[in-house]
View 1 (tube, rainbow, N blue to C red):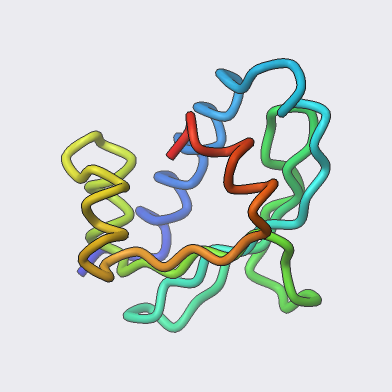
View 2: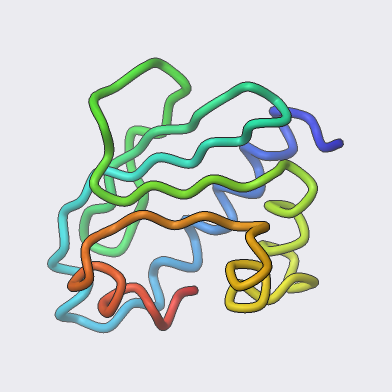
Length: 109
């Protein structure tokens, strides 16, 4: 099991990948949460202009884009050792978002 700090670092790396979004997707402003159940922690942030800002573990209102993933899977996903689509299909990653948000974010996932 990865630590909270390792997950925080992986989330920073994931946030860095958001810079690869196309211009229309960069105009998105969405709240995001990433729940890590094996560590009993949820990270919250705001996706704005292709970056993930204001990342915290403090409680917030329900996010518009919600991910649930175990700590080790998060590390593997960000490192490129776990394919998002296959992890999602096997239930290792849960993603809740509107259809339009899913379509915009599909290149990142």
